[in-house]
Image 1 (cartoon, rainbow, N blue to C red):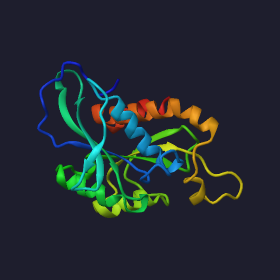
Image 2 (tube, helix red, strand yellow):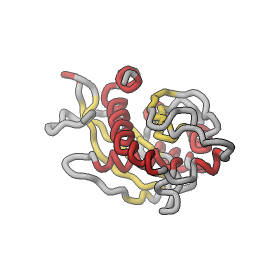
Image 3 (tube, rainbow, N blue to C red):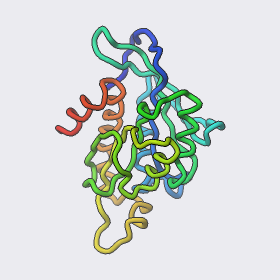
Length: 214
């Protein structure tokens, strides 16, 4: 498991890393394609050691968070750094507000923010990592960029594919995964969680080399 150690090294003086899963709130949207980012955050919370963690409300930001610590770096340079796992409690198109509030509350620079989100232009199950760039019509990313005042944050892009036929993409992303897609999620969610851990532990470039090469 990337980014964890049973015998943690010395704490880091660096500010926390903020990992955000985009989605819409409530059970109506919990299993939809647009919420795959939040599904990955649930996976990350399950992987915390020594035991799984439960998200709790952070009233100053209108988000649900888990505070944990991961081992970052390599070899003798390893340190233990605080990580904030977060799920905004707002709808997707205004999710930037809670993200910006969390970044300010925990003194996180935008360059240390990792946003996990669905991506129409990638085939289902494909995972790609990048920093910056456009939002590609994604309302959650657009809101995040506006609220942070920059596009220079990291993204974990999880492919959900384009809708079939003439189905409206706005309708497609708000539909539940079909049976085949749900089977693939058993592999996609842990892989995406490992990608997040690898970014935090070893940096974006090393993470890209490993994840994109699979």
